[in-house]
Image 1 (tube, rainbow, N blue to C red):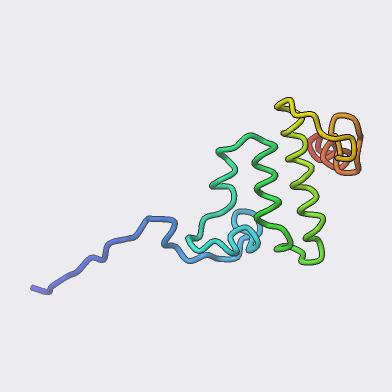
Image 2 (image 1 turned 135 degrees about the vertical axis):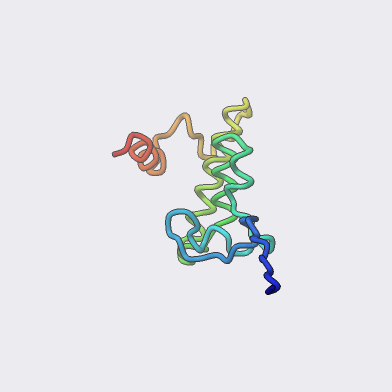
Length: 115
């Protein structure tokens, strides 16, 4: 009789090697997180504005290092929008998302309409 050994299969996704997958796991999504978590693991528990602010802050400059300032400005835009939503009066010198139709508003509106 031969001795057979069946190896246990590890089904835990955290233990699977990361492969380059531009749809499900783009490389800039998990960079910098020592535990392999992705930003979506955090943002899916926040409202839309806060989730997007966290997303832009955590990924700032990772996809394109030359756009770090733009990424942080997008995060600030979402934070200002959330502050306005909860009733905080933004100072006049600060961008006010409900008073101005910014380039970002235009781009996002087209994106959300599929255009």
